[in-house]
Image (cartoon, rainbow, N blue to C red; front, side):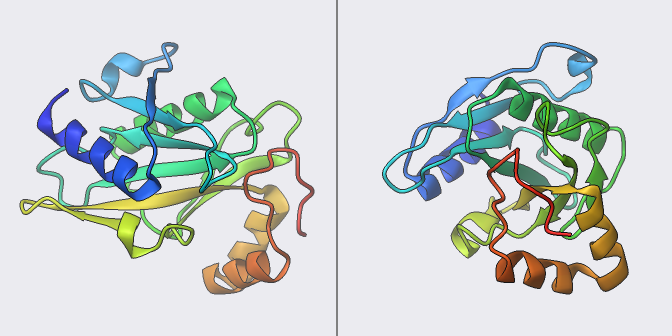
Length: 184
């Protein structure tokens, strides 16, 4: 593993106090992703009762504003790996992804899910400890992908990011449940 990937992995593992397993999505144009790109899968443990999935190597040394993305799921499922791999490919197609951006998954998060969209948020569950990794030559930002419904995306478009996050907090969004009802 190159030193950049090692530092990304070490950052996740230090913050989450757990070891991730490398996972790969092998279908589609994955050869267009950076060498060594993979998804880290963290099982539930004492501090966290859900599965955690995280990109490793989505960003690369020398990028102006490198980012990595993670998400949470109540269930271990290959679709979590596919979703983050597709998102990394989208990023490498030249699309700028930043905090607050919304995405169209093109299909349900997991078959049967109403969540067909995603929103990039700050890593509120882990705070500043996870959000930024200073590598001296660049600062990598770690963002949280929250799967959302089309109605929730429409709400975000109408009322903005702050109001949407406030709604999620007030209604206690069950963000790790692929089969949750829409809040809208």
